[in-house]
Each structure stands twice: as structure tokens, then as C-alpha cells.
Image (cartoon, rainbow, N blue to C red; front, side):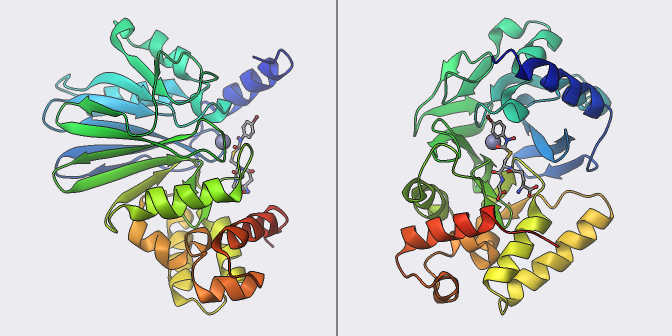
Length: 293
Ligand code: GBP
Ligand code: ZN
């Protein structure tokens, strides 16, 4: 850990500890519950619970106290048991709370801290693409999606016909992560080949609330795409009420997210290129310099 960054990290945490940018929502699926918990300025943490066993996983618990508070408020019959921390990538605003999370849970030596990068705080279970873990009845599949960081992993959690994907900083609602440690080819593989091959009904739970600013860029790329307008209206309504715009679905993202639409003519015309990898690179470059009014 860089010595200069440490106090900055501490200060940022203490400022935001008692604040929520969005209310906590709980998505109840037939086999799993997903609790969406806000953190820091615009991050999301997730508590995934297998409804049958009460076994639970936490995704990117950067503010672990908030997750513990939530469990205490919803778990009257003491059923929820955290078995696993799933880290999407090593950036401090995602994995910087792992050690603290372990400290806060009694008997935490049993908990696995899963991730695809040795830079992840407190990691004890390094995974690679295709590795599978179980959480009660739920199956967790690790999808290596390098680009935002070289060790980024998305987690596909499924049971029966239900699929939830925790996409960290790879896929956002209406956008994607910056290419800090990778190439346009890698983001193409992540968004089009890996995530893009999952069924339309797969739910997307991403790492940040960036939806509105992403959609403003999407609208700039495709001014005549009505699905973008519809999603902007939905997102404005959500944010007005401080509700998360999460989750979306893979099918929805294919309709309005320009980074998932690099093969569509209207996006290609905007960047004046027709090779999907070049389109991906051009979109990322343009968004890096795009100012939302
Ligand atoms: C916004 O607010 O919409 N555009 C953002 C600005 C992920 S966080 C903030 C930003 O750059 N966010 C990053 C990103 O990938 N955004 C996608 C986009 O702008 O289209 N992070 O916190 C970022 O990964 C971080 C932490 C970065 C440690 C580097 C280190 Br080292
Ligand atoms: Zn990041």
C-alpha cells in the first residue's frame, strides 16, 4: 500500500461512512435475494443470500459496517451466514474494506476472500476464468474480464433459471469502465463475447451509480435511439427519489449501451469506423473527453 494514499483513504472513508447516495433496496428472486447497498460517493456493495440455506456472499464491501448494519436489521432469525467475499478488482473503492469486513465477523477464518488479482486486500482464494464456487444452492462462476484492471473478475451467480451478474467496473448501466490496464480488444471480449453471450434476462449489478452520465454520452452517440430516451426517463425518476438504477439486464444493455453496440450501424456511423474493436477504442477515447452539461 502506497504510504501517501493511506491518509487520503482514511479521510474519504470517515467522511462518507454515515452517508448513503441511494437507499438500500432488496431484490427478491425465487432462489436468491440481492441487497443493493450504497457506499462512498457512488459505489455499490451487494449482499447475496441463498434463500434456502441463508448462506451469503458480499461483493466489494468497501464500507463493511453498512453491510453488517443491514444484516442486523433484516435477519431476525439469525439465518444469514457470510461465507464469501467476492472482490471484483483491486481498486481501493472496491476491495479496500475486505480486511475490516473479516474483523467484523466472528469466526471469519472460515471466510474465503475471492478475486483474480494478488493486489486485492486480504485475498486468500485466487480464482481464474471459469472457476466455480458454491453458495448453498447457488453456483458462482468466475468470469475473468481483464481491461479496467488486468485481474478484474465478474461473478455470475445462478440457480435454476435465474442469473445475476456482478460486473464491478467492467460493465456499467449504459457504459463500461476505463481501460486502465487493458485494450479495446479485451473490453470487446468482455462485453461482447463473455457477458454478451449470457441470456437477455441476466440481471446486471454493477460497481457504480454512473447511469445518468453514461446515458448522456449514449444519447450523444445515438441521438435517434428511443431506448436511450426511455432509460433516461427511468433513471431520472430513480435518482430523483434516491433509488438505485440497478439492476438492469443484459437484454436492456444491448438496446442502449453504446459499448455493447459496437456492431450496430448507428454507433459505427457516429465514430466513422466499422471494425468493432476500433469502434470500442474510439468510443472509450471520446467518452474520456466527454463533458456532461
Ligand atoms: C463518472 O462520474 O461518471 N466518469 C466517472 C468519473 C471507475 S472508479 C470517475 C471515473 O473515472 N470512474 C472510473 C471509470 O472507469 N469510469 C467509467 C467512465 O468514466 O466511463 N477508481 O476509483 C476508478 O476505477 C480508481 C481507483 C481508479 C484506484 C484508479 C485507481 Br489506482
Ligand atoms: Zn475501478
